[in-house]
Picture 1 (cartoon, rainbow, N blue to C red):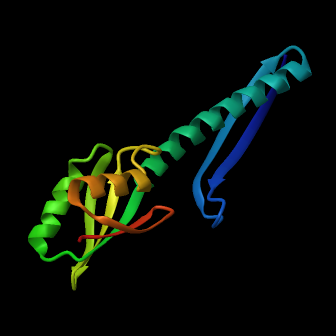
Picture 2: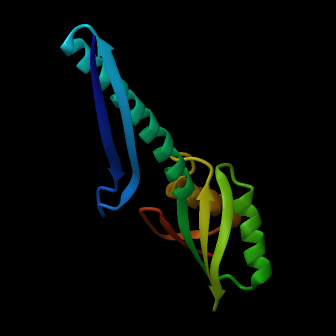
Length: 149
């Protein structure tokens, strides 16, 4: 019988920045009477292990990072901000809200999403316009700027 071992290391990185999102390593072996078959078994097994690990870990990481940065201007007071936060919290797809800053009529919030590919910047802008009467000033990437009338 022939025995072969294979090791794979893989990483997922952001295209724009090169920042590493996730690293995985896997090891597997193959056993067969024929060299090529043992090698094939080791490679298939290690590839599947590494692919499954990378997919699972990357999915968890991206969900943790799925967020929209929201800036709201013309916010009269903290009571109005609290009302807007309640409106946002009630939206489908919103997991959590973090108030980064509030002053001089401008609020900066991070909106954490339930899943990747769910609620997006455009949909959030539309929902806010319909439910809170906001005016969209700018959308770019995962950033949204709106103003209250």
